[in-house]
Image (cartoon, rainbow over all chains, first blue to last red; front, side, top):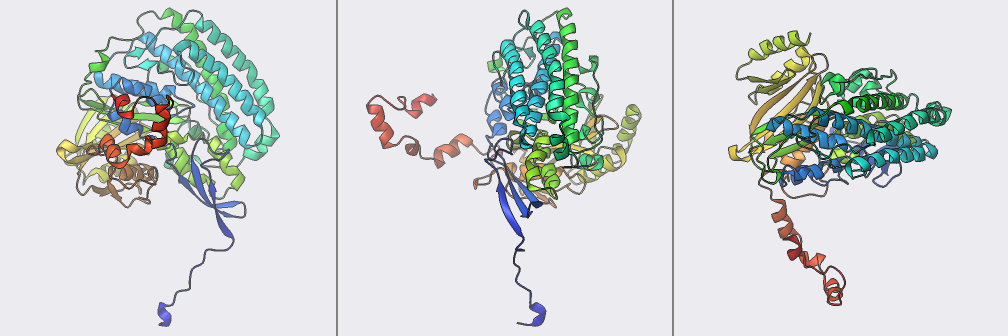
Length: 380
Length: 184
């Protein structure tokens, strides 16, 4: 061998080792995995490994009627299913040129905010569990259950409501529902000081979460971060205000931001958004009784409905960020193509891979929960 | 601000050849552009018109035209408007340029489209398998891929209805309706 051709044999450095984090792991949301390369406890490299929840929704939707897909879409994100139904319905309404009655739009806003409350309670409850504070998680799940009770009363389903259809909603609000929702909101608001004491001002949480998983606003914009995670870097952007859909332009609410861009900031933004959602819901309770009229516009026989040729790309602010559906119709009774742009398709893959590098092994779970990543949105 | 920017946008897009602009709503713009000019259009949109957020890249299999339609949805935080840039590439060989150098999120969407439609993006950082790790069939989102036919050809129904289950059914247990009848 000539000396210029000599190349030393490469061994992996003996201080590095690989660890499979997930797919079955209490620190992972859903079935999702990470291949991490470690030096001691420090993460050198993280690679997302998705696919454990792939059910082929986009392909399934191409083989089902427009209306049948309503039962399919909420399954794409379990903790926050309502935006999925609403966004898909918005897409069809735009293509078919349907005019949704005002009352239905207010009912949709009500559901979206109820779903956001439930999802946020779940999200920071889950985050607390990754810091070893299980009480917050139990409280969060218990309080979320009360919201699910209201969903059950309104729609018949606790988790998947399958209540929004193209053109409006399926049923009107039951008698006395708004009063019960109002008292639930009072209860949730009265719980917030307890949550503050237990979690948000708790030094165990603050010292764990501060300066962990930090991203600057510039990085967040570059990486395609949306929703509460973007607002936690100080940018007051919300699809509800800046690209309004339904009746959000008639509703008064603030967009909470935090400057830090770390796990702590992301949770504090969610905490402030709970208050904003309660505020929006109170406005709905006040306005809804005065809005009379139908709850859906007439649609053709849904079993033989040929939606006209067209395409649309509506965007909705889900609890996790920007959710969008790209729906294409070729004039048939089934969608020609549906593409789901879940917010977590960014957060759970590229953003998490980048934020994990340099952090410690025990913080990966915390970063994932603080991003509120939802793996089924990645796999679809 | 918004109005001014939109007018200006129409002007700079008008300078590029073969661009068809359609204003769908006040803040929704559809741009049909030639595949060769698309990266330039996106660069203009990002660099000079503040469309910094790549919302999604969607792929549609236009099998009747033997083409793939790629749709790039970009959003501007300043102008508060969304531009959907449509382009078509031939289905065979199905190769296109990556826009990873312009938009970092493109890596995820391009990898996804590569996996589901078999479109190869030159310059994308990772075209490896992601969601369909153990899949070696054709790209499943293509229109010529029939899931039901694939299942019938690939999987042996006998495996799902083995002898021991048949014996159990004779005694009145197990799944009493044969799978074929249940599907009708």
